[in-house]
Image (cartoon, rainbow, N blue to C red; front, side):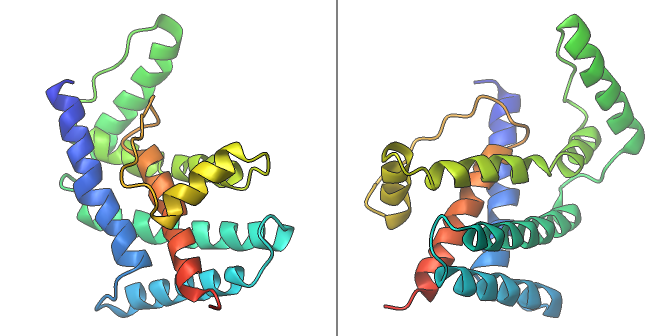
Length: 190
């Protein structure tokens, strides 16, 4: 694993995951963050009363997901270690387009471009989390059993392989889904 990959993974672990946990599970000091956390908990509580797999349950998931992603993205914008460099981002975006044609990956060395890429493409978290949500709702027993084990805490270790997906977007998507499930479990009538 290259040093750049390790740095990328550390960035995701140090910056993105705490954003999710702060907004979704932990009390915070600022009014906007507290209101956002309260809204997420309210949505999770309402969805815990819905029938899993129903359209209304899916709508609750989408509302919770969109709210969480926006809160995380706003916090991420404020906490990125390097500010966005718009000109470097434009160059990176153009290079990514050219890479699709010629097959040569561009350099992600410019941290200002990487910061912009992270914010501009953060919407991929939504797409990936929806795929995971659909897999967790799978009724054929394969993915459903895996997600039940994963989210119930009965698995002591979970190995996740990333085949791409940007700067930790797949990890953030899994963290979003697990946080949604955890909040629902906290709110479920016992």
